[in-house]
Image (tube, rainbow, N blue to C red):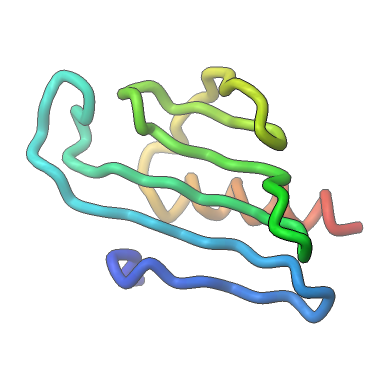
Length: 92
């Protein structure tokens, strides 16, 4: 799966998921050599759920709230799968 194209997945109700994965130089902040953000957004543009590592910590955000640390799933694809599982639960 090529995640560097930053795909957007739209649902029939107008909500959507945006995925951004970018290779970056390995550093203290991005020790995996990637920066990612997965975001689930309501049709009106309000955020529902986001996973990211923008600050060097794998975080889960609800709405516009502050992030809480979460366990990284071992690779981007597995972490993205966990995110989509949670999106699926939220959409029910």
